[in-house]
Image 1: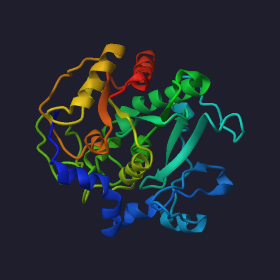
Image 2: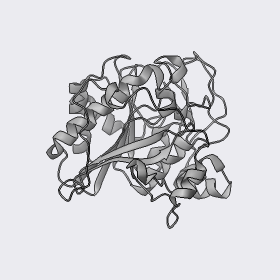
Image 3: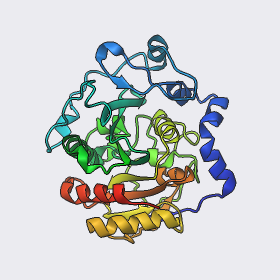
Length: 331
Protein backbone atom coordinates (compact mmCIF):
# COMPACT_ATOMS: atom_id res chain seq x y z
CA UNK A 1 0.00 0.00 0.00
CA UNK A 2 1.67 3.21 -1.15
CA UNK A 3 1.06 6.33 0.87
CA UNK A 4 0.90 9.87 -0.40
CA UNK A 5 2.89 12.56 1.33
CA UNK A 6 1.20 15.28 3.40
CA UNK A 7 0.38 18.43 1.56
CA UNK A 8 2.42 20.46 4.04
CA UNK A 9 1.73 23.11 6.61
CA UNK A 10 -1.58 24.35 5.20
CA UNK A 11 -3.04 20.89 5.23
CA UNK A 12 -1.77 20.23 8.75
CA UNK A 13 -3.41 23.47 9.89
CA UNK A 14 -6.64 22.35 8.26
CA UNK A 15 -6.43 19.07 10.11
CA UNK A 16 -6.07 20.87 13.44
CA UNK A 17 -8.99 23.21 12.76
CA UNK A 18 -11.21 20.81 10.84
CA UNK A 19 -14.07 20.82 13.33
CA UNK A 20 -14.51 24.58 13.06
CA UNK A 21 -14.31 24.34 9.29
CA UNK A 22 -16.92 21.63 9.18
CA UNK A 23 -19.31 23.58 11.35
CA UNK A 24 -18.81 26.69 9.23
CA UNK A 25 -19.57 24.61 6.15
CA UNK A 26 -22.74 23.25 7.79
CA UNK A 27 -21.87 19.61 7.38
CA UNK A 28 -25.18 18.60 8.88
CA UNK A 29 -24.62 14.87 9.08
CA UNK A 30 -21.71 15.18 11.44
CA UNK A 31 -21.76 18.62 13.01
CA UNK A 32 -24.90 17.91 15.00
CA UNK A 33 -23.28 14.81 16.46
CA UNK A 34 -20.16 16.71 17.41
CA UNK A 35 -22.07 19.16 19.56
CA UNK A 36 -22.28 16.40 22.14
CA UNK A 37 -23.13 12.74 22.27
CA UNK A 38 -25.97 12.99 24.74
CA UNK A 39 -27.36 9.63 25.79
CA UNK A 40 -30.77 8.29 26.41
CA UNK A 41 -30.36 8.06 30.15
CA UNK A 42 -33.18 5.55 30.42
CA UNK A 43 -31.01 3.10 28.50
CA UNK A 44 -28.21 3.51 31.01
CA UNK A 45 -25.50 4.44 28.50
CA UNK A 46 -22.40 6.25 29.77
CA UNK A 47 -21.71 9.01 27.26
CA UNK A 48 -19.16 11.67 26.46
CA UNK A 49 -20.75 15.10 26.08
CA UNK A 50 -17.60 17.14 25.43
CA UNK A 51 -17.86 17.58 21.65
CA UNK A 52 -17.38 21.17 20.52
CA UNK A 53 -15.95 23.24 23.39
CA UNK A 54 -18.70 24.91 25.39
CA UNK A 55 -21.53 23.26 23.47
CA UNK A 56 -23.73 20.35 24.52
CA UNK A 57 -27.09 19.01 23.46
CA UNK A 58 -29.98 18.13 25.66
CA UNK A 59 -31.26 14.59 25.49
CA UNK A 60 -34.25 15.78 23.46
CA UNK A 61 -32.02 17.68 21.04
CA UNK A 62 -29.72 14.70 20.62
CA UNK A 63 -32.69 12.46 19.86
CA UNK A 64 -33.68 14.87 17.10
CA UNK A 65 -30.26 14.53 15.44
CA UNK A 66 -30.50 10.75 15.19
CA UNK A 67 -32.33 9.13 12.30
CA UNK A 68 -36.02 8.92 13.06
CA UNK A 69 -36.17 5.23 12.22
CA UNK A 70 -33.73 3.47 14.53
CA UNK A 71 -32.33 0.08 13.50
CA UNK A 72 -34.06 -2.99 14.83
CA UNK A 73 -32.59 -4.61 17.89
CA UNK A 74 -29.18 -5.98 16.98
CA UNK A 75 -29.04 -9.71 16.56
CA UNK A 76 -25.31 -9.72 17.33
CA UNK A 77 -24.08 -8.62 20.74
CA UNK A 78 -20.59 -7.16 21.23
CA UNK A 79 -19.71 -10.00 23.59
CA UNK A 80 -20.79 -12.66 21.09
CA UNK A 81 -18.11 -11.42 18.70
CA UNK A 82 -15.37 -12.35 21.14
CA UNK A 83 -14.00 -15.76 22.00
CA UNK A 84 -12.18 -14.26 24.98
CA UNK A 85 -13.62 -13.71 28.46
CA UNK A 86 -16.69 -11.42 28.17
CA UNK A 87 -16.16 -7.78 29.03
CA UNK A 88 -17.19 -7.20 32.66
CA UNK A 89 -20.01 -4.74 33.19
CA UNK A 90 -18.81 -1.45 34.65
CA UNK A 91 -20.76 0.21 37.41
CA UNK A 92 -20.22 3.74 38.65
CA UNK A 93 -18.43 3.05 41.90
CA UNK A 94 -15.79 5.12 43.60
CA UNK A 95 -13.19 2.36 43.19
CA UNK A 96 -13.72 1.77 39.46
CA UNK A 97 -14.24 5.14 37.80
CA UNK A 98 -10.77 6.55 38.41
CA UNK A 99 -9.16 3.61 36.60
CA UNK A 100 -11.79 2.21 34.19
CA UNK A 101 -14.41 3.94 32.11
CA UNK A 102 -16.65 2.55 29.44
CA UNK A 103 -18.33 2.12 27.21
CA UNK A 104 -18.31 5.83 26.40
CA UNK A 105 -20.43 6.72 23.38
CA UNK A 106 -18.51 9.22 21.27
CA UNK A 107 -20.94 9.39 18.35
CA UNK A 108 -23.33 7.42 16.17
CA UNK A 109 -23.16 5.71 12.81
CA UNK A 110 -25.38 6.56 9.83
CA UNK A 111 -27.89 3.95 11.00
CA UNK A 112 -27.81 5.15 14.61
CA UNK A 113 -25.47 2.59 16.19
CA UNK A 114 -23.19 3.89 18.96
CA UNK A 115 -19.42 4.20 18.60
CA UNK A 116 -18.00 2.97 21.91
CA UNK A 117 -14.67 3.78 23.52
CA UNK A 118 -13.23 2.20 26.67
CA UNK A 119 -10.59 3.85 28.83
CA UNK A 120 -8.11 2.06 31.08
CA UNK A 121 -5.73 4.14 33.18
CA UNK A 122 -5.69 7.79 34.18
CA UNK A 123 -2.19 9.02 33.30
CA UNK A 124 -1.47 12.06 31.13
CA UNK A 125 0.18 10.08 28.30
CA UNK A 126 -2.69 8.82 26.13
CA UNK A 127 -2.58 6.01 23.57
CA UNK A 128 -5.40 4.71 21.37
CA UNK A 129 -6.32 1.49 19.61
CA UNK A 130 -8.92 1.68 16.82
CA UNK A 131 -10.55 -1.46 15.44
CA UNK A 132 -13.19 -2.14 12.82
CA UNK A 133 -12.65 0.86 10.55
CA UNK A 134 -13.67 -1.74 7.97
CA UNK A 135 -16.43 -4.14 8.95
CA UNK A 136 -17.49 -7.31 7.16
CA UNK A 137 -14.55 -9.61 6.54
CA UNK A 138 -12.36 -7.59 8.95
CA UNK A 139 -14.61 -8.52 11.91
CA UNK A 140 -11.64 -10.24 13.57
CA UNK A 141 -10.21 -6.80 14.38
CA UNK A 142 -13.35 -6.09 16.45
CA UNK A 143 -13.12 -9.49 18.10
CA UNK A 144 -9.53 -8.64 19.00
CA UNK A 145 -10.61 -5.27 20.45
CA UNK A 146 -13.18 -7.03 22.63
CA UNK A 147 -10.50 -9.43 23.87
CA UNK A 148 -8.15 -6.55 24.64
CA UNK A 149 -10.88 -4.67 26.52
CA UNK A 150 -11.65 -7.77 28.57
CA UNK A 151 -7.97 -8.35 29.31
CA UNK A 152 -7.21 -4.82 30.44
CA UNK A 153 -10.38 -4.60 32.52
CA UNK A 154 -9.23 -7.71 34.36
CA UNK A 155 -5.58 -6.56 34.50
CA UNK A 156 -5.64 -2.74 34.69
CA UNK A 157 -2.24 -2.84 36.39
CA UNK A 158 -0.79 -3.74 32.96
CA UNK A 159 -1.34 -0.13 31.88
CA UNK A 160 1.81 1.62 33.14
CA UNK A 161 1.55 4.40 35.67
CA UNK A 162 1.35 7.76 33.96
CA UNK A 163 -0.43 6.40 30.88
CA UNK A 164 -3.98 5.77 29.71
CA UNK A 165 -5.31 3.54 26.96
CA UNK A 166 -8.39 4.22 24.83
CA UNK A 167 -9.88 1.41 22.74
CA UNK A 168 -12.50 2.11 20.06
CA UNK A 169 -13.88 -1.37 19.53
CA UNK A 170 -15.58 -0.72 16.15
CA UNK A 171 -15.49 2.48 14.12
CA UNK A 172 -17.63 1.15 11.27
CA UNK A 173 -20.59 -0.17 13.25
CA UNK A 174 -22.94 -0.38 10.26
CA UNK A 175 -20.39 -2.35 8.24
CA UNK A 176 -19.94 -4.65 11.22
CA UNK A 177 -23.58 -5.67 11.05
CA UNK A 178 -23.42 -6.46 7.36
CA UNK A 179 -22.44 -10.00 6.36
CA UNK A 180 -18.87 -10.97 7.16
CA UNK A 181 -17.67 -10.35 3.63
CA UNK A 182 -16.84 -7.56 1.21
CA UNK A 183 -20.22 -5.82 1.67
CA UNK A 184 -19.18 -4.70 5.14
CA UNK A 185 -16.03 -2.81 4.18
CA UNK A 186 -17.82 0.52 3.73
CA UNK A 187 -20.33 2.26 5.96
CA UNK A 188 -24.06 2.53 5.26
CA UNK A 189 -23.42 5.16 2.54
CA UNK A 190 -20.81 2.96 0.84
CA UNK A 191 -18.01 5.23 2.06
CA UNK A 192 -14.64 3.71 2.90
CA UNK A 193 -14.02 5.45 6.23
CA UNK A 194 -10.26 5.03 5.83
CA UNK A 195 -10.41 7.32 2.80
CA UNK A 196 -12.66 9.97 4.37
CA UNK A 197 -10.15 11.88 6.52
CA UNK A 198 -9.06 15.42 5.53
CA UNK A 199 -5.43 14.72 4.59
CA UNK A 200 -4.67 13.98 0.93
CA UNK A 201 -8.38 13.30 0.44
CA UNK A 202 -9.48 12.55 -3.11
CA UNK A 203 -12.95 11.92 -4.44
CA UNK A 204 -11.54 8.95 -6.36
CA UNK A 205 -8.24 7.11 -6.52
CA UNK A 206 -6.28 4.82 -8.80
CA UNK A 207 -7.51 1.28 -8.09
CA UNK A 208 -4.34 -0.53 -9.15
CA UNK A 209 -3.08 -2.65 -6.27
CA UNK A 210 -6.03 -1.60 -4.09
CA UNK A 211 -9.05 -3.43 -2.69
CA UNK A 212 -11.61 -3.30 -5.52
CA UNK A 213 -14.35 -5.88 -4.87
CA UNK A 214 -17.26 -3.45 -4.43
CA UNK A 215 -18.26 0.00 -5.62
CA UNK A 216 -17.14 2.21 -2.75
CA UNK A 217 -16.26 5.90 -2.48
CA UNK A 218 -14.39 8.38 -0.30
CA UNK A 219 -17.43 10.46 0.65
CA UNK A 220 -18.88 13.62 -0.82
CA UNK A 221 -16.16 15.67 0.88
CA UNK A 222 -13.42 15.19 3.49
CA UNK A 223 -14.87 14.16 6.85
CA UNK A 224 -18.37 13.85 5.40
CA UNK A 225 -19.29 10.85 7.58
CA UNK A 226 -20.47 11.01 11.20
CA UNK A 227 -18.20 8.12 12.15
CA UNK A 228 -15.17 10.04 10.86
CA UNK A 229 -16.19 13.25 12.60
CA UNK A 230 -16.86 11.48 15.90
CA UNK A 231 -13.37 9.96 15.99
CA UNK A 232 -11.72 13.22 14.92
CA UNK A 233 -13.53 15.10 17.68
CA UNK A 234 -12.46 12.54 20.26
CA UNK A 235 -8.80 12.68 19.21
CA UNK A 236 -8.76 16.48 19.23
CA UNK A 237 -10.37 16.51 22.67
CA UNK A 238 -7.97 13.82 23.98
CA UNK A 239 -4.45 14.48 22.56
CA UNK A 240 -2.55 11.26 21.94
CA UNK A 241 1.05 10.14 22.04
CA UNK A 242 0.35 7.41 19.49
CA UNK A 243 -2.49 5.53 17.77
CA UNK A 244 -2.68 2.17 16.05
CA UNK A 245 -5.50 1.16 13.71
CA UNK A 246 -6.19 -2.54 13.17
CA UNK A 247 -6.94 -4.06 9.75
CA UNK A 248 -6.81 -7.51 8.15
CA UNK A 249 -5.15 -9.11 6.35
CA UNK A 250 -1.83 -7.99 4.90
CA UNK A 251 0.38 -8.74 7.89
CA UNK A 252 2.70 -6.00 9.04
CA UNK A 253 2.95 -2.33 9.95
CA UNK A 254 2.15 0.64 7.70
CA UNK A 255 3.17 3.95 9.34
CA UNK A 256 1.70 7.29 8.37
CA UNK A 257 3.28 9.28 5.56
CA UNK A 258 4.95 8.56 2.24
CA UNK A 259 7.82 8.36 2.82
CA UNK A 260 6.93 7.33 6.37
CA UNK A 261 7.03 9.99 9.05
CA UNK A 262 10.05 9.46 11.30
CA UNK A 263 8.11 9.06 14.55
CA UNK A 264 5.53 6.70 13.04
CA UNK A 265 8.31 4.63 11.46
CA UNK A 266 10.08 4.44 14.83
CA UNK A 267 6.83 3.24 16.42
CA UNK A 268 6.39 0.61 13.70
CA UNK A 269 9.90 -0.73 14.32
CA UNK A 270 9.28 -0.83 18.07
CA UNK A 271 6.02 -2.75 17.63
CA UNK A 272 7.55 -5.12 15.09
CA UNK A 273 10.23 -6.10 17.60
CA UNK A 274 7.55 -6.83 20.21
CA UNK A 275 5.12 -8.72 17.98
CA UNK A 276 7.01 -10.37 15.15
CA UNK A 277 4.77 -8.80 12.49
CA UNK A 278 6.97 -7.58 9.63
CA UNK A 279 8.20 -4.05 9.12
CA UNK A 280 8.64 -2.91 6.44
CA UNK A 281 5.58 -4.77 5.25
CA UNK A 282 4.76 -5.92 1.74
CA UNK A 283 3.53 -3.13 -0.55
CA UNK A 284 0.98 -3.62 -3.32
CA UNK A 285 1.30 -0.25 -5.05
CA UNK A 286 -2.06 0.99 -3.77
CA UNK A 287 -2.44 4.77 -3.62
CA UNK A 288 -3.61 5.65 -0.10
CA UNK A 289 -5.70 8.81 0.30
CA UNK A 290 -7.59 10.36 3.22
CA UNK A 291 -6.40 7.80 5.77
CA UNK A 292 -6.91 7.83 9.53
CA UNK A 293 -3.22 7.46 10.38
CA UNK A 294 -2.18 10.31 8.06
CA UNK A 295 -4.74 12.62 9.69
CA UNK A 296 -3.81 11.55 13.24
CA UNK A 297 -0.20 12.47 12.51
CA UNK A 298 -1.26 16.07 11.83
CA UNK A 299 -2.40 16.25 15.48
CA UNK A 300 1.14 15.54 16.67
CA UNK A 301 0.79 11.81 17.37
CA UNK A 302 2.61 8.89 15.82
CA UNK A 303 0.20 6.64 13.93
CA UNK A 304 0.48 3.17 12.40
CA UNK A 305 -1.85 0.77 10.61
CA UNK A 306 -1.49 -2.80 11.91
CA UNK A 307 -2.58 -5.65 9.63
CA UNK A 308 -3.46 -9.02 11.13
CA UNK A 309 -2.33 -12.18 9.35
CA UNK A 310 -5.76 -13.35 8.17
CA UNK A 311 -9.48 -12.59 8.39
CA UNK A 312 -10.45 -15.08 11.10
CA UNK A 313 -7.83 -15.17 13.90
CA UNK A 314 -7.39 -12.45 16.49
CA UNK A 315 -3.82 -13.51 17.32
CA UNK A 316 -4.57 -12.28 20.82
CA UNK A 317 -1.31 -13.16 22.55
CA UNK A 318 0.75 -11.49 19.83
CA UNK A 319 -1.39 -8.37 20.02
CA UNK A 320 -1.47 -8.30 23.81
CA UNK A 321 2.31 -7.97 23.68
CA UNK A 322 2.01 -5.43 20.88
CA UNK A 323 -0.34 -3.15 22.85
CA UNK A 324 1.81 -3.44 25.97
CA UNK A 325 4.76 -2.33 23.83
CA UNK A 326 2.67 0.56 22.48
CA UNK A 327 2.09 1.79 26.04
CA UNK A 328 5.84 1.72 26.72
CA UNK A 329 6.78 3.65 23.58
CA UNK A 330 7.92 7.27 23.75
CA UNK A 331 8.74 9.57 20.81
